[in-house]
Amino acid sequence: MHLFEAIVLGLVQGLTEFLPISSSAHIRIAGLFFGTADPGAAFTAITQIGTEAAVLVFFWRDIVRIVTRWAASLVRRVPRNDPDARLGWLIIVGSLPIVVLGLLFQKQIESVLRSLWIVAIMLIVFGVLLGIADAVGAKRRRLEEMTIGQGTVFGFAQALALIPGVSRSGGTITAGLFMGFERAATARYAFLLAVPAVFGSGFYQLAKSWNEPGLFTLPETAWATVISFVVALGVIALFMRYISRHSFLPFVIYRVLLGGVLLVLLGAGVVQA
Image 1 (cartoon, rainbow, N blue to C red):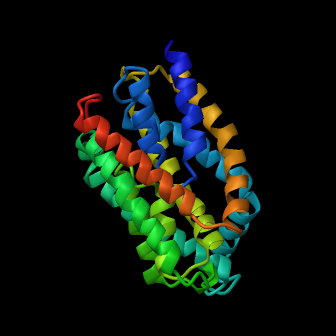
Image 2 (cartoon, one colour):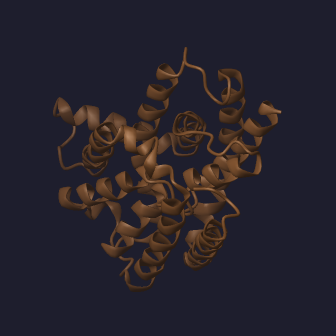
């Protein structure tokens, strides 16, 4: 039964990681249907390796170009203000907040912050913020125009995703829209910015849980990770195509409804936080 649960949770992870609806919230909620209460922060972090591998495949040319130009800028083979070299530095700067805050608040992230009350409230609050940002944002700036200050704001927005219910892509996209960046640009940057943080967190949790008992065995978690990779690859392609023509309103409505239903279930005692 645990293998089936792991596969289903891997499917959920792949479907929700890159949509602005919070994959960690959905993993947390999905665990209720199996009576497991909470699959755990470690399981979530490890399966995210699969979804980030999908980012590497989908944006392979972009990533190779950014890394190559950034490395070349270190030895002055390309100018420091080269757009791709700058983007490399901005991704490094934007990755620092989630690393620092993740280490400082690791215990809280793995315990109290996974309360379903917090998940429900974050789904609603950040859903509303995403809707406001999408409505008022200028949507004119491109990634080439990003400053260090804006890159830092992106980084702290991503760090908010340490709280289940916020959404890594949702938080980053919301910040980008408020700062006037294009929808497709914010989504692309959100995916690229997540690569160092998610791989770092995933492999850290993998090493930490190697000899520790958990809800799922490592082979079961591996299956979930593979499933999440395959599904996420398709989701990225569809999502990037969708947001080039449409708003984020359907995701806003979904978040608010899901958070509202969860609050009602918690208040009625149907589920436990």
